[in-house]
Length: 137
Image (cartoon, rainbow, N blue to C red):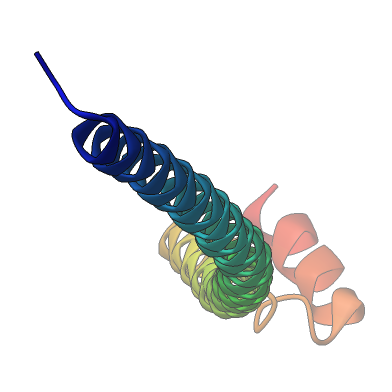
C-alpha cells in the first residue's frame, strides 16, 4: 500500500497537473480570443477596402460614361454640321443647275422663235412688222 508520503506526493502532483492544465486552458482561451479579434479586424479591413474599391470603380465608370456621352455628343453634332453643309452645297448646286436649265430653255425657246420668225429681233420695230404684213396682202 501507499505510504503517507506517496499519497502526499500523488496529491501534490495531481494539484500541479490541474494547475498546469488550467493555465494551459486559460492561455488557449486568450490565444483564441486574440485570433478572433485579429480575424475580425482583418475582415473589417478587407470590407472597407472592398467598399472603397467599389466606390472608386463606380466613380471611374461614371467618369468613363460621361466621357463617352461627351464624345457621342460631339460626333452627333459633327454629323449634323456635315449634313447641313452637304444640304447647303446641294442646294447651291441644285440652284445653279436650275438656273442653267432655265437659261437653256430660254435659249431653246428663242431659237425656235427665231426659226419661225417670231423672235425678239423681228419685233424690235413693230412698224416694220405691220408694213411687211401689209405688203404681203
